[in-house]
Length: 549
Image (cartoon, rainbow, N blue to C red; front, side):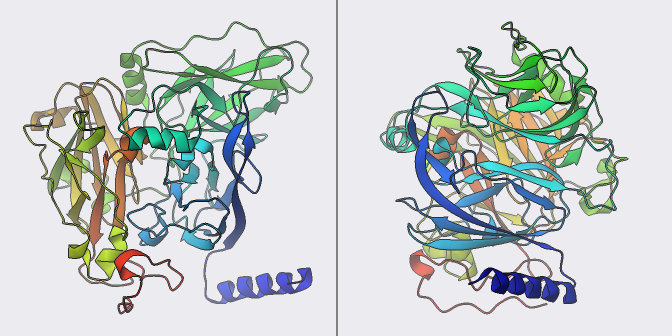
């Protein structure tokens, strides 16, 4: 199609959208392929998007419709997921194995979703086959609409900090380790935006700052395993947003960012004009791995000091930092409002689910929640449910709301629980292990009301922060500790609750929550899209009647 014809087509589509009163559309076309990368200085196979590692940014505004046409030029199936995007009424586009058929090699699929009532810093990544260990991730930023005030002045510029631990082995080798019952072990390094500074004077700057100006840094931990602490030589960071929520603007010398989490900070160029190191290093590990990036003042003279600022020690410091995060309730932005009230004490908790992680090494290696290690199915769970053949694919509620007494015995099976639409539910995560855990729940923002050492009991509710707990989508759980979250299950669909640690997730430490609207109405959930990929036992079945208003 010629350039003029394409322009006319896009104008017609935009005009049609305007007539229907739809929000604006943003279009992307991605070629996902293998390529050679060298994040730690040694060439290895990586996953590129349009030839880029990390992948291209998705840049949008609250309520925009995002259309991403993904061409899979890998030699294996591919799924993309949009970490932190709530997919209101639309788990079809979530891009997890329980909701969506993978894109076969040599084919394409177009994702279409809306960033409804969201702002902030997020990221996307490939969700199957341990592909994230090879790249394929990138930033996804959502601006507030122009009429919505932001609680800080516009920065001079914005930068991404996509940091994470990194393995020099390919994703296929790491996957073979897990499939054979072996751990992937410790990573080989830490990277920032796909590389790390060598520190030998040859490094080009990753970021530049004009003296006296303030910059916004969008920081995400896109790694596989380790929490990271980030700090900048001589420059404190003012935290302004956390996982889509404006927060009370405290200043930090460093921040612990757990796997899957995103923070947004402001940094002012108010120091001597020269180079400075941004430093990210592993936390809560017996080893210390460090990644660096150069920040250069535009009129700077002189290299960064080789003396790096130290990371904090122990997890008590990190726990206290978590407790310092407070929701900015005066900021104008989208926010969840459970049952129409911010008075949490007036909300009736209709159900409490306590989830405890465990591991079994007797017959290979498996991780579990409440004694069940999740196994993905050939037919995505959501499709089986929609087509009325769920009983041929999985059983609901094979775990109870309380963990079993014996956590050593693990059952391998699809792990799906039912949640009643619009119930207000409390979920407790208990970590009996020796390492920090990080969990994500698709489809929702929840209130992270407490993280405490020891075991949870109902009496511990008196320790909850019920006033200004931050709304977020990931939560960390420290060793021998518990965390509590609260949310209203008001987003119908099939939603993945998972460990953000790649090894744990791949080997079963996840589950799905089925939230069905009894009305089967388009008011509550979208029907199966006409373009949805079909696979498994539903591939040749007649399509069910769509939902109606």
